[in-house]
Amino acid sequence: MRSIQRRPLVPALYKDTNYSLTHLIEDIKHGNIALPDIQRPFVWSPAKVRDLFDSMYCGYPVGTLMFWETGAEVGMRQVGGGATERVASRLIVDGQQRLTSLYAVLTGRPVLAKSFREHRIQIAFHPEDQTFEVVDAAIRRDPGFVPDITALWNSGYKSEVRKFMRRLEQARGEKLGDEVQDRLEERLDRVRDLRDFRFQTIELNASADEEQVADIFVRINSKGVTLNQANFILGSGPIKSCDMVCDAVRKP
Image 1 (cartoon, rainbow, N blue to C red):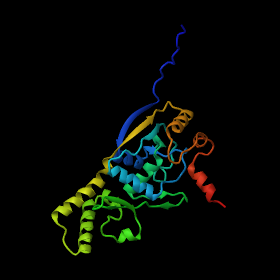
Image 2: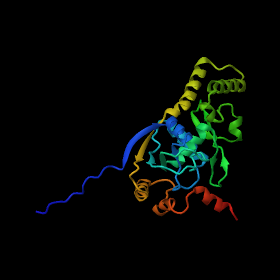
Image 3: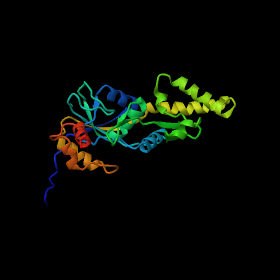
């Protein structure tokens, strides 16, 4: 009877962990997490950002993030745009769209759109209906909405809540009852508490090379707008920066 030869076990190239949204945002701000050259410089449509916040508010899973623990050149573009003076300890392999969108909404900073122009992502919240919407002129006029939820993560959060309540009372022509106020405040607090939402994360260790990272990305990334393996690897080739590509596209 032939003996079956088994492959020797090799050390895992990754570890599973999780981070709160606040932790991730702070790491992006301080340059600890950077955007590598292997992904295209565009962000989700505002409608997708709205749906992401709605899923988080409902307590739904929103997918796993993947980082690569490796050094990055000083000057690599951060998730929200611009450059960092710190060498990043982790690169985003999968989850750029989610992190870019969340970072933009929580901080109020502009992001780079498909047109390579900066713009702000503004999402509104209706506490009574518990719905999120992309901001437009009609929503700005509707007193039932907090027209820009970025304000809920600012230091003046309480004053924003009071301003919302006063505006709603003026529109209704009567004072809100204590029960109604408590319910609305509780729902606004729930949006604010999304900063504590925890993201499942796969962290590839520094021993993984570019080819392995590309292979892992292609194998697990089976939805949305994916990058094929060739595009993924080309990002680490002669073109060292997404911004170089953007500049080339803008030139006639």
